[in-house]
Image 1 (spheres, rainbow over the protein chains, first blue to last red):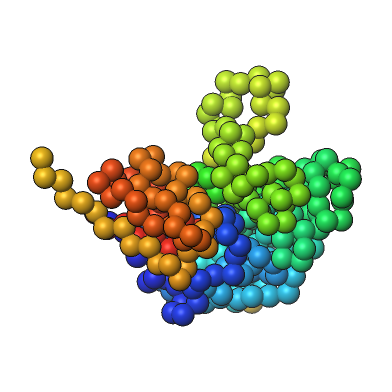
Image 2: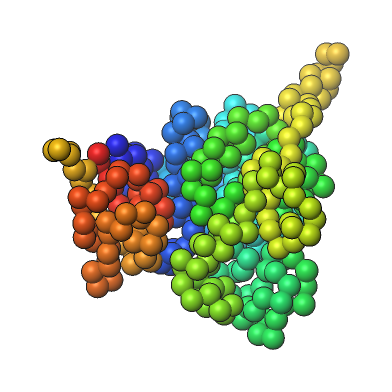
Length: 272
Length: 64
């Protein structure tokens, strides 16, 4: 039976603005299925984004949505969560929005371990503004601002999140569509700051400059480089060269920020 | 044996012609007709829903 996506989409908003073959649509579908599985109420769910292609996502969804300044999704979402701790808060954004311009907000939200989910759609480039290289552009890849190849090493978003203190970190790809909703469901259920990095494709500004002939080639690359966590445990570092590990990469329990802050308020009021 | 065929609805207004559904259909049910996807061989459909799952543009609805 066809899944009824229309139930969660604002009427008259489709077709969306993303280019033909852009994986953001696949991620949005995964997010909708995850929300449906979790049974989250529309009025009790806030979806927050910054600026960029990926950040257009909340505009299509019929929830409480917030489209904020570039990179500031985590900051605004923290505000929403602090004011209404009972709300389910989900941030969405791209790699540039999350790790460059919003890098500071991102790491500090990780450090605080505030109960929300951040979905980073990593397409290795700034797509909307014309294909400038981002911190997630691989070394040697071409972008409009690195026409002779990018000299910088790329960020590993998952490792960055783990290092900064996020308590749930997972990674999926736009190719593995059914895995996306499973990861998001687990991330939302986790009490604490959860990061889901989804490797995506940008055929228009990344693929075309980096000798990918088609969207299909980009999707097949995602399929080829992805290695599930369990399979990766049995592989040597040489075999893992050039691969990316997918699945739930890290999970731990740590005091959650809004609960800790409620205790501070109690103490300030004179309680113990 | 009489097989109940699914219905594959393609919303042409939403389809951007990215070829993902055509390429990832395991039984090659779909084809490109100009810039949009269309159903070529409905009899071969095994209702795996891969086209609906992967379509980034919300353009395919499979009802089995």
